[in-house]
Image (cartoon, helix red, strand yellow):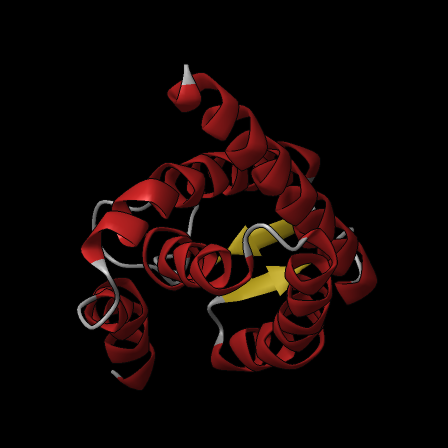
Length: 150
């Protein structure tokens, strides 16, 4: 029961973090969050095919992906962009710290709760994947800024 409540909370509660932020800035960075969630969805599909990990508990409608992707990760990406975009090194270092927290502290806790099991990948591999995703998200936002400026 706790795990199911946690999964629903990771999907719904993070969205409330966006309420006090300036809406025009949230709108500006929302595509970056969606792009990141799309990339992470692809990673989850690859993980399923390559047996990197197995999602064992999820909420209805999600089969081999956790609610983390469309809640906490998407909103977290928007918030990190909101506060650091335009300063690559600040953005990158923030992501290094957050990704380390997720890979080395949250991931083992999720395994303990039975949300997923790592199979053919180590937490360091998860860290590398999320770090690469953060760079791709930043590049995407720079590209989008260029497209929107025209």
